[in-house]
Image (cartoon, rainbow, N blue to C red):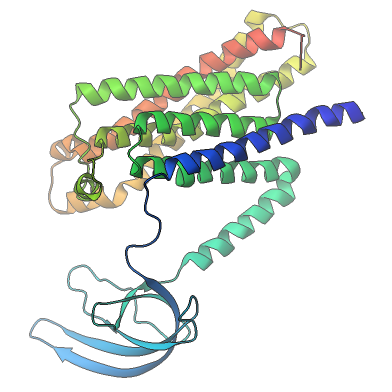
Length: 375
């Protein structure tokens, strides 16, 4: 019993240590030449009181300008009381959902004249509480699996924000960086959640194969459709933001394979786990029987996985599509805009990755599970 426990704990610790070493070394390499810190100084403050209200009126609209006092609560200037203003005039696009109130946490920045400008409300604490509730529930109901899921998610998120994004800013190859982060995410997630065994190896092989297919198809379709990467106005900023212009098509490639990795991984893990349980209950299954069972299971998962991926991409671009349609853009013209084309490309390419991961995972499962050399 003790030997079995050690056989599970030691690989787990090794994977965790290697993951942390990758994140540390990757961050050190990626951050070379990257400036750290905000371009402007921001202050978190709590609104103390409303000092004055100024009324304004034109032939088209009425609005007010509010003057507030607020206390800075962090940094060297913590405890200092400052003033800022906020107006209710928004025109066609309303800037603020409401005027600030006493006790609100706000984000301020100092202008050239030394005064404070209102930037936005501080909302991150609500997200942190919301996320903490989810983490607690996942650990309570998922126990060790739940904890490992949170741990793997944290490592993957850290890889994206501490390695991948800095590597882009430092001018490293975006294609290589995206692939490395995806491989890291796949290996870390699968091994931490399922352990180092046949089931994990089969899922990892199928997932890597599916992501590889998605990456190749992305490169082919990007070249075929002559994409520029200029999907929205912010894309122009990416060109001039760095000394060396970014390859926007590489950004599209990275977005597609990173976005598809999760769905492909879900397909691969589901098939390998199901076949693992079947094999444990029916030890005499042949290679072809395991493979056919994997295909049958995969067919049931395929539809929901593709729907999940497609709906996620549609939901992420819904606001922009509604704006274009509100401007009277025809469906044909809408479907030919590069922004929409890229979203469709992401959905279809990710679906291809899921589709090919199914037989690859079933094939590797059949080969590994039939063998009895290791568990």
